[in-house]
Image (cartoon, rainbow, N blue to C red; front, side, top):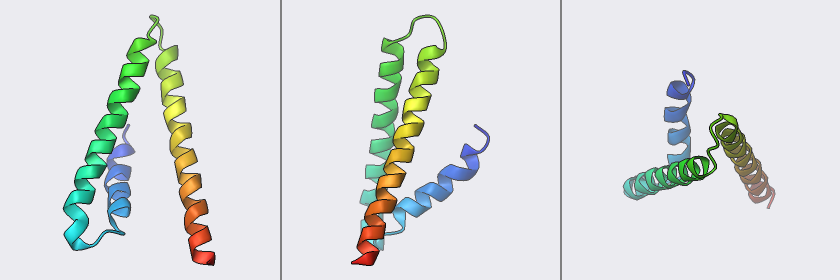
Amino acid sequence: MFCLGFLLPDITALIMEPFAREQAGSASALLGSVQMMAGAVAAALVSWGYDGTIAVMAIGMTVCALASMGLLWRERRVSGARQDA
């Protein structure tokens, strides 16, 4: 959790970089909405599957980490194809 304080502002800045100054507010609002919705869905799924152990939370964290890595891999592939074209 300590590293999140260093990572999240930089990640947010990288996400906002492609947007023009006029679009920054809308992009920031969309980013916040997507983050809150993803957190709400993940929390609901973990609480729905809770069985008294921490296994469900560990599985949820693993699934979220793998989904993040998959999205990063996809974005790098797509942006690499755009640069080649």
